[in-house]
Image 1 (tube, helix red, strand yellow):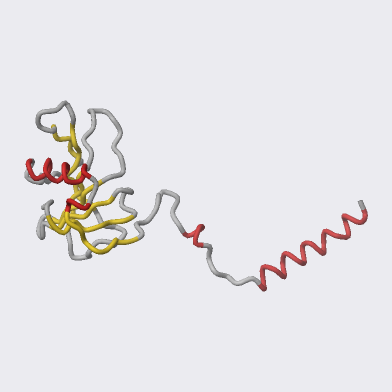
Image 2 (tube, helix red, strand yellow):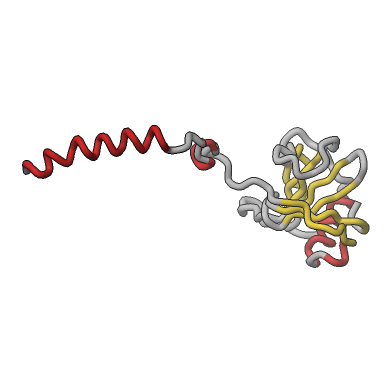
Length: 152
């Protein structure tokens, strides 16, 4: 017990000196808000025609084109013609990550139709209604690739 009692002041002094000598760089983890899931990583180049994407992307482009790329204040489910499925979209995409061009104003649209009440997946189209440029993400906004033709 006496040996432990003698070590206590040494340990306190070591901690004190470490705090003085350690760099005071804030931890990136500590500075990150807990509610952030993951920030988008990049825009993948080059832009590709819709035919170069998975088949469901071309189908989604056709569905949204048929619905005239609607815009709404809130996420809205739209019936997919000739099916019992719905597809959600038309609400504002904020581009908070800044990965897409800063001068754009964007709307988000699901790629995959679903049964009403079913959870949405990660695939989205993001479109600028002013320029008609469409971006595809298969990982919920972590990466984007521009669809160069066949979707707008």
